[in-house]
Length: 166
Image (cartoon, rainbow, N blue to C red; front, side, top):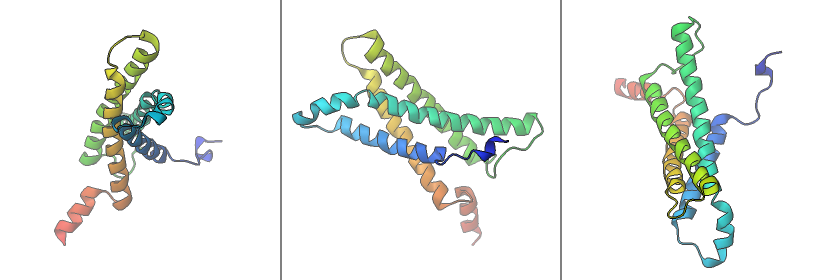
């Protein structure tokens, strides 16, 4: 019995896109002036402003790590586990940028959770703010990656090369 038999009903990229939309909505909710009547509800959403960007960053880091393992197995083990387009320069650069931004977002999300719940520090809570800001930037990049992947299944560089030849 192999692991391929247990196909997940939801793809990781679909979850990433949904988390990206939620992070973006949380950022809007955080930066828009909210009526006083909604203030108790928003106090429940404050932990979500750190947890959701952290989950998005963790999911992106899992995908980036899987990409790195596939590339490393191609070079070291002699096995070719790569998918089409894995070794393309644009894919490697996108993976690198998303990985760095996801690590930075995860750092701020964990720091925000620590400051809010464990450190009981007074003053301005800057870590949750940075978690939402970097999480929303990461979310926009994830949504952009999803749109490009849906519009150009062969890859954007292959599409651009084809347009130049025509």
